[in-house]
Amino acid sequence: MKLSDFDFDLPEGLIATRPARPRSASRLLVARGDRIDEAHAIDLPSFLAPGDRLVLNDTKVIPARLSGVRSRMGEVGLTEARIEATLLDPLPDGNWMALLKPLRKVRDGEVIRFSEDLSAEVMGRAEGTAALKFNRTGDDFDEALNAAGAMPLPPYIEALRKSDAQDKEDYQTIWAKKTGAVAAPTASLHFDDALMDALSVRGVEITYVTLHVGAGTFLPVKVDDISQHKMHSERGTITAQAADEINDTRASGGRIVPVGTTAMRLIETAAAEDGRLAAWEGATDIFITPGYRFKIADALMTNFHLPKSTLMMLVSAFMGSERIRDIYAYAVAHEFRFFSYGDASLLVPKG
Image (tube, rainbow, N blue to C red; front, side):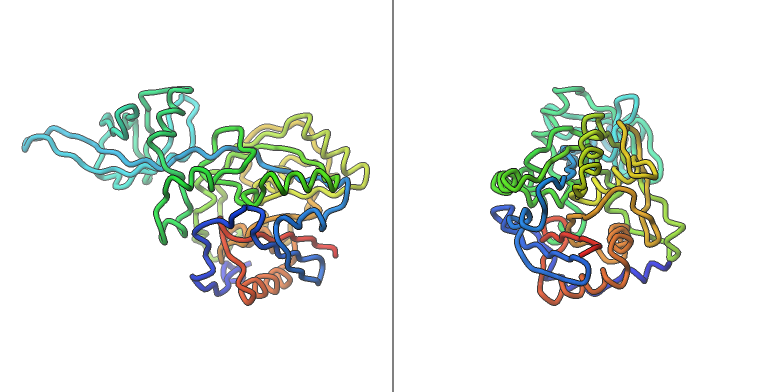
C-alpha cells in the first residue's frame, strides 16, 4: 500500500492545543459497524457492557524537553551556546539518548548545564542524537528533571504554542505510575475520576499494562511504499496478573477494549495466535497495517490521528480502509478536535 492511501485534508483549526475541561467532557465519536453516534467521554460506559475490560497504559511521561547552555573556552575567551535537548530513551549504562539542537554546537566531553542542579556530559554523537551522562541519578535525577524540564508536546502542538506549566498536569494520565515515556498515551487523557466511577458502576473491568511511549511515535513515514517503513522500538510490560485478567474476561465472553494505540500494540505483540496472554516484557516494534489479523482486541478507544501516520494505518487495519475514511470525513465535517489534546473515538468493527 502507498502512503497516499492514508492521507486526508484536515483544517488547522481542528488541531486541539488544549484539552477539554473536565477531561471527560471531550466529545466521543462512536463507530459501531456502519453506524456513527456522537457522545462525550463521560458517556463511554453506556457503550460498554458489564464484564467488558478496558486495557489502560500506566506509563508516566517525563518532562523530557530541556533547555541549557554549553560553555567553551577558546582562543577568543569563553563562548556559550544555547542547546535544546529532548530525551529519547534510557540506555543500559544509565545514560540517556537525546536529540540535541543544534548538535553541531557541541563536542564529545562537553557539559551542558540545564539548571543549577542538573547538567549532562556529551558522551558521543551520531545521526542527530547524542548520549548524555547526567550529574544525578535515581530519585535525585527525577527531582532535578521535574524542576528543569518541560513536557515534550508533539510537534504539531509545539508549532502552535510552547509547552507550559499547565501541560505537566494536562499531558499526564490520572493513573500514570511507571516513569519512562516521552509521549503520553493520549486516548487516556479523557479519563477523570467521574468517568472511572461511572465505569465501575457499569461493571466495566480495568487492567493496567505498561508501554513506554517513545519519541518515535512522532516520526513521519518517509517512504511511499509503507512496507519499507521501520517502526521505532518501545519497551513494555504485561504482568502475570494483567494477563490472567484479560484471559478470564475473554473466557467469560467479555470484550477486550484497549484505550489507545499503545495498549493495542502491546497486547497484540504479546498475544499468542489464539489470543491468549502470558506475562510479557520486552521491546515491540510491531507495525499494524491493513491486512493484519487482530488476535485479542475487540474494540479500540483512540484519538483522531495525523494524515499519513502509522496510527492512521493501524485504525485503517482495525476498521477497514474505506470505513475509516468515512469516519474521518464525518469527524472533520462535524468539527471533532484532532490529535493529542483532541476528542476521542470508540471504534467497534462489529456493530
